[in-house]
Image (cartoon, rainbow, N blue to C red; front, side, top):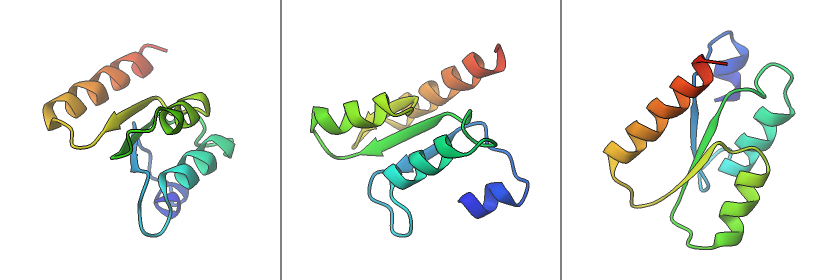
Length: 90
């Protein structure tokens, strides 16, 4: 995903799961927020964890939103739409 961005592609929002095979959600968030070029891309984290501490950790380190799995796809679409609207007005 980072190589895709580094090759000149732009993302309105990044959706990452905590448990991904090559780069987990925490690594994605940290890499994006540490980058001068990508730090302003909103990140939505998906996870099956019910631990409030995990949600707090991600949100306090720059995640725009955190959604528990299983989730309603319509809810995810609305959250993404709201994020895009919010960021397009800045």
